[in-house]
Image (cartoon, rainbow, N blue to C red):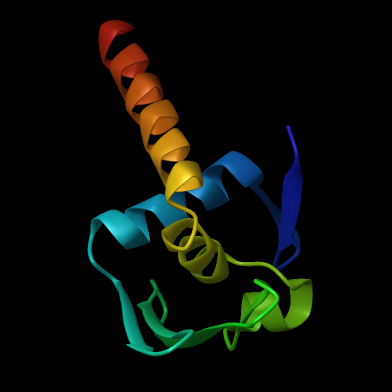
Length: 102
């Protein structure tokens, strides 16, 4: 499993993907201008900018220190429908598997 450091702890990459997907699913990502998004996270509202080259930046503390966050990943997913569809399918498959294990 790939981990991403988060405030001295590690946030598993799969958890970051789930958080990004939840932001989209819950309608917490809003395009406010060409390439500029408001993303309502757990600890505040952040500005994510998608640059011409496809890279993204976010003004949240996590992105500032680690160069990655669920907010920026959500914007990347919105702009890559094939990626979003693939992630949605995988998350739904895992949810179904978890329900059958109960």
